[in-house]
Image (cartoon, rainbow, N blue to C red; front, side, top):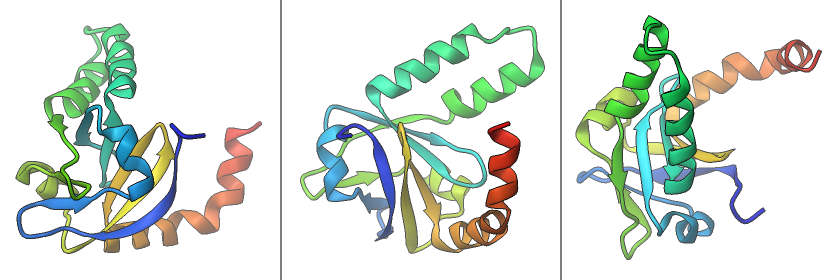
Amino acid sequence: MDNVFIGEYTHLLDDKGRVAIPAKFRAILKKGAIVTKGLDGCLFLYTAPEWMKLVAKLNEMPISQGNARAFARLMVAGAMGVNVDSQGRINLPNYLIKFAGLKKNVIVAGLMNRLEIWDETTWAKYKTKTEPESEKIAEELFI
C-alpha cells in the first residue's frame, strides 16, 4: 500500500509555481518524478518507474494511427522532470500551470499509480458532474 496514491488533499500554488506534495507521498517521489498534461483538465504526476511503464505502453502504440500519435505527444512532449525540494514541494513549469488552469488553491488527488493536480474549482465542477453518475459509470465498466 506504500506505493499506492490515494486521497484528496488541498494545497496552495505559490507565486513561483511551487505546490506541496502531501507528506505521506514525498518519500516515494524523492527518487524522481514526472509531471505532464493530464486528462479532464488536470496534471498527472508519476514516479519515475511508473512513468517508464507508461512510456513503454506509448511506444507500443501504432505510429501510423493519428490518435496514437496525438496521445503520445500530449503525454510525452508536455512532460517535465520535477524534484521534491526540502520543504516537500515541486516546481511546476508555467506551461503546465496554464494548461491545467491552476490558480491559488489546488487539489492533489491520489489515483493509484499517479497523483493528479487540479485547480480547486475545476475539481469541484468535475466531481459535481461525475459523482451523481457513479452508479451508471460502475455498471458500464463492470459488466
